[in-house]
Length: 327
Ligand code: ADP
Ligand code: TRP
Image (cartoon, rainbow, N blue to C red; front, side, top):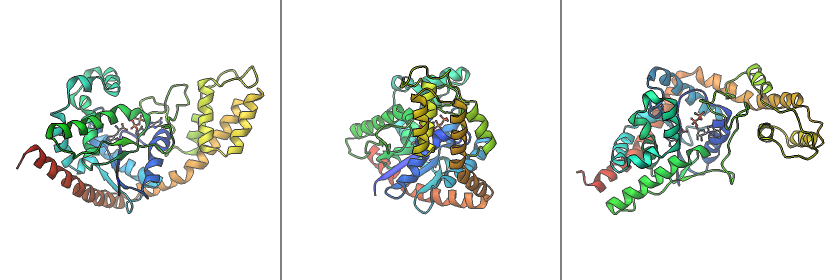
């Protein structure tokens, strides 16, 4: 079975952007692929240098992964730092990664701008660590959001370069994987581009009904359509994007018609949207609470996942050492 890898950094709780952009795809892939889903705790150190928050968040994300439907019987679910083989590959890949190309990665430039006092080497080599996560299992497919495209390009470059330098056909070039033709981008409701932790505009899976309602009711809108059938400005399009994801088709149709004949009332739309988001996330929130309360189970699942991931990683790293020429 084809191998699949993906991971999320434990820098907070999962939000609807993570869920619809990544985790739903993880869940859908489990039946058809040999999946490795991990929690990228080393990656978190590039922006969150103190591990005490991370250790707690690892359990949190693990509980959230499970609550979303990741199944340890079907997939290998593990914590990145449990698989040290990744670091050896990271070292090898770094030897053939160049300053110029790493500096050009937009996520590096963005993070360097956000934390000018901590432009560390880990931040610069973030893409080679990500490439190691993927190549350590020689995975073919990587379900990620659109914002990861440049990192994926670097992972392919690392694979190609390794093969070229050592004259082998060892690493396949991993491809981003989306179920729909286009990568999904979940917008923020504050008028900004995307929902994201650093944007501070997230609706979290663990948010209770009241919190969700508050956040949705605060969504940015405009003064309303003045011409029938006019195109929607971005902030309104964003609300419809959400409706399309969580509401019944009839509900979407109802508000589309209201928009088109200029009788739309944003308050009604938001109320409906909040209600539908709550209905959707309610059972997930319940399961998060159950898993979070069972630390023994979480740790058992992580330990089992680590064993399986290490096995796959050891096979790769043994061959890599041999190819490079280490005895
Ligand atoms: P954040 O931007 O909140 O820090 P991460 O960068 O940790 O989230 O993203 C984890 C995964 O979720 C990645 O695969 C990313 O592409 C996806 N993702 C995050 N936010 C969104 C969004 N708003 N829309 C679609 N996918 C997203
Ligand atoms: N860079 C990814 C993100 O910010 C997280 C990540 C780390 C990842 N290693 C990976 C995703 C390997 C897919 C495969 O979301």
